[in-house]
Each structure stands twice: as C-alpha cells, then as structure tokens.
Image (cartoon, rainbow, N blue to C red; front, side):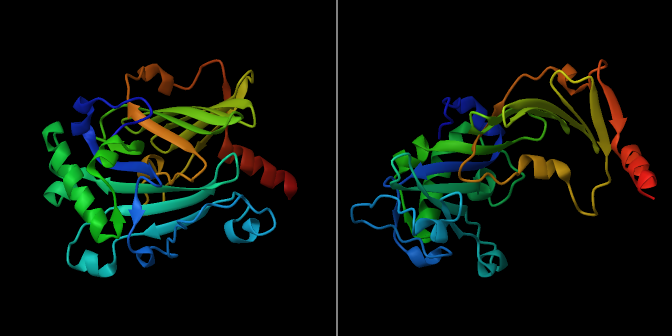
Length: 276
C-alpha cells in the first residue's frame, strides 16, 4: 500500500486506520445491491458527459457517492468489516471514472481489537484478511492491487507527529502539522494565504502581511472531541489528502509575537453593545 510517495514498510507498525483508493477496472463489483445506492458499473463503452442530463443526477460537483458499511447485525455479532465508499466522477475528457475508497483498521482486522499493535510482519496477513472481507462485501480485487493501492488517509499512533497536505485546486490548498493535540496550518484559499494554530480549545488565525489576527476559545459539547474531528475529517471526492509521519519543530505551534490578536468573544460583545 503506497502513498503518492512510497511509504516505508517500517512506518506500518505506527498505523491504526488506513483508507486506500483503487480505480476501476482494478476492482470488480460482484453484488451491486450491497451498496447504497446500488453500484452498477456499465461494462459497455462509456459515453461522454451529458451537460443536460448529468447535473440532475450527480449535482454541481459532478460526482455520485455509493456506500457500504457494517450492518446492525454485523455489529451485534461483533463482525468487523471495512467501510466502503465508491465515487463516480468524470475526468478531464468527461468520461466516467470510478474510485473505490476502502477504510479499515489494521489491528481490528487481524486481532479483532484496536489495542494491539500491528507489525510489518503482519502486512501480508492484513492484506489477505482484507481481500477476504471485500469478497464478502461483493468486491473482487487482487492481492497485488491491494498492496499497490494509493493511501489517501492514515491514522497513526496519537503521539506520532504528522504532516498533512490538502489540495482542491491551484487556488485552494493547505499544509498542516499535528502533534500532541497541537495543530498548525498554512492555508491558501482563493489564492490568499492564511495561518491557523489550534492548541487545546483555543484557536489563533491571521493572514499573510497582516499585523492583526483573531483568537477564539470555545468549550466543546459533551462527548465531543475536536481532535478526533481534526484527524477524521471526511475527504470529498475532489480533494487530494495525504498524511505521513514527520519531524515537526515545536515553535510552529507558538502564536507569533508580532501579530496583535483580538479576542473573538470580546469583539462579539462590542458588536452586540453597538447594536443595542
């Protein structure tokens, strides 16, 4: 299983959950009805994108999503299965393409729990078990395809520093660093560069070439873990997302002293008072 830059096998033991991507025809759907909606891939020559018909079927972003998750009966019987999400999209020549995203926990797959660590010596066993699970879920795929699949998301051990990259297009992308519940990101949105630091329950944000920024602290709702949300962000079909272990300088998590940060709650109070 490879990232766009080939992952080192020695990193495998640090991984808990993986999401890999396989493009059709490197997989075959044996039972379309197991997906919601039914994942029916036409074997006949594909037709060009029809601008009059497709928007009504696929929406503005020109893609359709198909899912297959563990059933209530699976959970009741403690049967672990990976999470499957297929995306039907259109390439630059407006031809249909299908990508299958497979998200699974390596420890749960092989040991039935997420407590024990998986070593690189377990990689072959994990792939064989995953291949068998996919067969039960109506997906046929070769062992070689699974090993060579592109990794689109990885959850590493909690104390492993990560560098993550996100990209929608040349005007919207980001590089982020995560370490011990501290988060720093350089975000380009519509061509404009901004920065975010998140430590515990406080966030600092500012823009390039600006002397002022905003600080905002908040109290998570009961049962909410914002750090789980940061690591488990759902990735849409048109976003390239990759994470890997990295050496992170702790200084990036310190709000810059040359930026004057205004407290967001105080700004809201002042705005309310002015409106009265």
